[in-house]
Length: 469
Ligand SMILES: [Zn+2]
Image 1: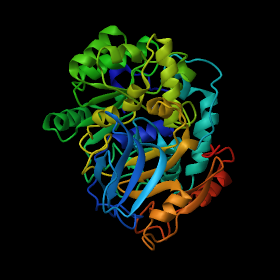
Image 2: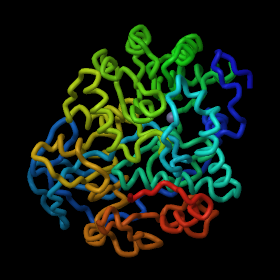
Image 3: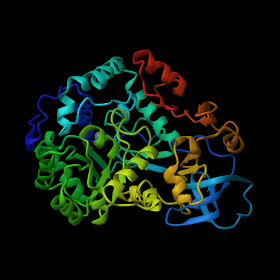
Image 4: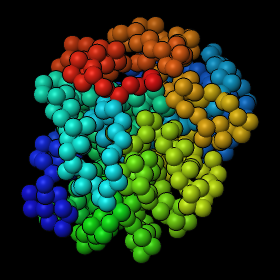
């Protein structure tokens, strides 16, 4: 590839996972049959969750969310009538969390403590240590063809048990024909594929750029995720000039990282109506510095969060939320927890161009819900303090995707799934995980259970990053 735009991708090996993800990420998805419709493990009948409801535009103490089939039937302040099952959650009910940046296929590696700080992403991708920590294990894991889709499945399980119902970053090698455990905002979602992701803008050629411009102008692409300016030097900053020069700084553009962006660049992002996705943990570990997110927020730029990947990022979006809060405080912004919650729900849905369906609890929307234990008087503060062990229930399109075994047993329609939910112990809590989604419908005889998947991964890579630890 030409390496135009001045990005120093030279020296990065052709089989680097990032390179492969790039090669597939901007590819046009071939038309595929729609996956089997959710919900797989529907509740037996309409049910209601009772607790503190964060819509998240307001908090309703003692509120109810009524779920019927795949959708939210009602959000109300008083007990609904004619609903047989009401779960007294004693907790907080909010929209499923949206993680706007990650690399799911690589979320199986152990955390990496880089030996030094880097100036840009190309430096560590070329380093010997990165090869040892990521590239070589990745080769071992992908040496046999059947495993790659399962790498993503492992990351999906990790997201789900952390309260996340939608993720970003699955490469084009994981196309719409796979049936995901959580939603993929940049793959096929709600029957459409209106997002594209670019990992290395500097390696895109003019034909690709022209194609993206056409899609953006026609409105057939409504979210363009671009890994950009990840680093702290001029090389990183210049990627922004390349983006502008390519005519790709648009209202649909979602800049991932933007670590090197200064005041003029952030002003241009705001003026263009573009958005930002922030992964402070990964930035701080690799570069010792992170994006000027407080300034971006002050400018009115929509900011979402992404846990990035295990080697340098956070093990969960809830963990990333705490890093974000600390980083904002260091930048002089004591952010309100209510605003933090919006960043991973309502604002994230807007950034993804999916605000009509996700990020807000309201009648008629898909029932993508999260119930968290409540351990603080202030419900927003309780969410900001939560970790994945506080997760009580996650539904996706009404599917009982993950939850307390007693609740799932009480709500599940008998015989609604081919296999019973997998029993897992999540930080000591007995939980049920619906791994009944075929990773490759029509090809696999049975979808992999998490325990089997984990055993298969560990057989090839003993340091596989744990999920419940
Ligand atoms: Zn990334």
